[in-house]
Image (cartoon, rainbow, N blue to C red; front, side, top):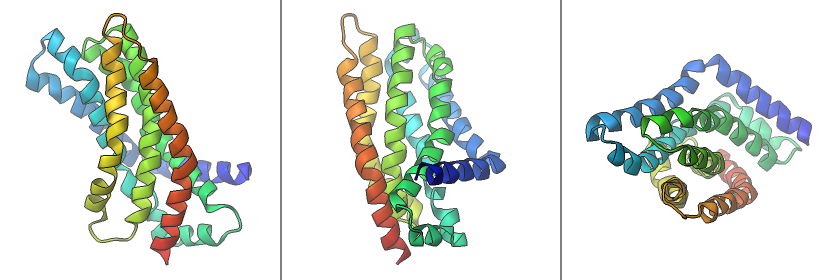
Length: 223
């Protein structure tokens, strides 16, 4: 089964790299959003340090959503998704491979660029390390939860708006604890481990249930 997982993962990565504009759009959107806030609120160091964690997480959340509508759409239109449903391999495994590809293309670049964003908001080294750890745990959760919404709204007219309404409330706990971890890292004697532990718990729960829920939703959408 791992061979099938890698085949689907590599296929999605190859197709995405052929459409580099889609991949770069997410990254540039994130950079532009986090760069506009200092221009709007001023360059005062303390203000930026307070706003930074929340701005970074809201931008990461919105950037992750940009590519969600395309997660299953292309395979749905050319019939590949129907073949995946009919194959003997577990559909949840194939869905997990597609979600992994989505995270590698949209979530991982945000983790890697986090140090530059942290410097822009005058965050300390500890806060930057915490932000990278929180994004590393939180962004896969965004992809996993978003896949459920993408599967439920597949093929629907106005699916993008419906997708946002469905998954944004589910993103709130990740947003709260992700930004909270970075904020706590800037407070003396504050412990960020509970925040990261909760994000880790969210990731385990999402990894367990999201592929199953997404595959069930895909079967409903295709029928």
